Image (cartoon, rainbow, N blue to C red; front, side, top):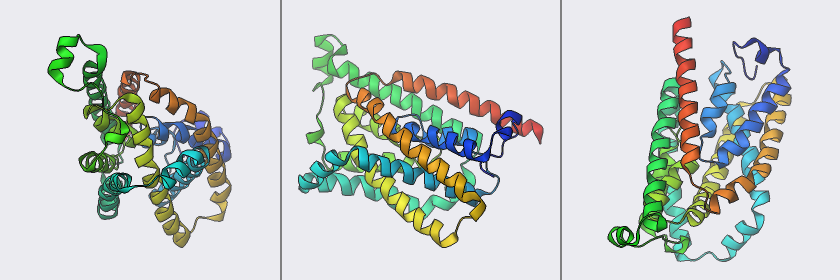
Length: 289
């Protein structure tokens, strides 16, 4: 049963409603630097690990489909304007998470899905994001002119991205296999630490994430099709996918807000609060044993 929590009010909800709520939460949290895996872990506590993973795969598929629809113009423009530099960026950012995912996906799923490890990922990623954004702000205009001269060039633009940036973005996306480390948060951290303007960092982060989300959804979807899903769970899966699709579309304007220059520290504070909630939950579960 999707969302088999000890919380009585949650359990009294129909399974379709619970699945839809989890899916609705997944959409925006996948696009924002707050970690979708941590949010899903709060509500989706399916005791069968295979069924839990299958449901998460379905949610990612809903998000990927919504992104391809919402950003179809941007995707088409990127495809028609594909050149050597962009190919290097895509290949360099795709290869590390693909290799690490294929090699370590199972061990990561078995060992790093606890409330404590997820909270650690949330907290570490939050502090890194906060630091990188503040550092870039000092370089880009938030500091006196003398300080900016000492720090070096103010802000880089997305057309400046090269092989080093690509590999660092790939490494950042690979770290997001650790539950709680947001893919979007990790790539934004790298880009802001490298001196990219917030708008350009947001666009680059989205462009390198979409192939990973789509590729992972296809690969895991094939595995899911081979394994199969119990027929009784199909309505809940459909509700989750539909909600994830809808809220992803609704969340795209929030992503654009970040690209217009909104500071990233509120996301870091939110993640630290979420980490505290997960730690408390983990301690309750340990006490219950």
